[in-house]
Image (tube, rainbow, N blue to C red; front, side, top):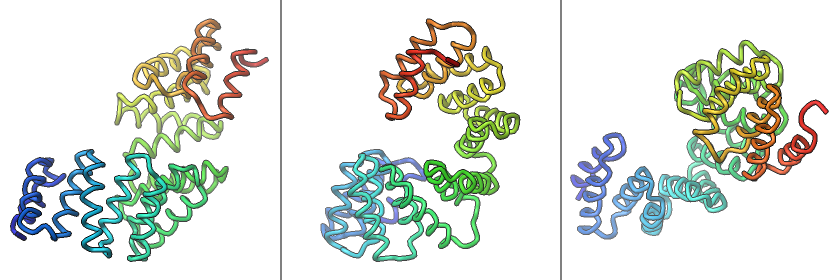
Length: 294
């Protein structure tokens, strides 16, 4: 039985052969239906494959057979989070943390789930605990600083957010999401326009087909007054991300600045139809009613 598991472990996500791994773990389970580790491993492969419902079923069984299986709680929480059930995810991550109070991954993932609920205070606390447990950070830890920075940003704690984005970039200077967060904030806050533009150009170079990055780059050009260049990037961003309200909102602003009022109103109306957050919706309604600068 253990050889079957060992073989399957070689076939899991790092090699991408999910189906072969699942077959091996299924055979291990057939030979020993009480093997918690086999259920855990098969559930983890299902999760890597994107089949979260099957993952949850297997991880349920792993936990039933071994109620102190920390990683099973963590992985089931991850599957719940992927399914949009952050409440259950938080319960599982909390149980993993209770069983293993120094479980860095548990704190980090629970922080993600709190962030998914817009509970940025709790998210920031969990990322802080993960950072404390890490000790001396390594390149792979950049996400803890990035997402704590995002949480601080949403809490209107910009100095702390900026410090975290800078630390994340120090740990891994080639992460597009980090470059985007820092670059966009610098530009959006009119702090460091040229520096922000440079970061966003680098981000787009690393991921040229990412609509969110293209929108940020377009917004940098907008802030610098290069409206035709802004429109070029934003139109491509809107084509790549047609359901993202903020991109349509930004594009409407750029159209307005180039005297394309009809296109601006259409873009703002599209942005409003995509159900932005209430505060953003009110701003967009104002633009539709009065345009910009009135």
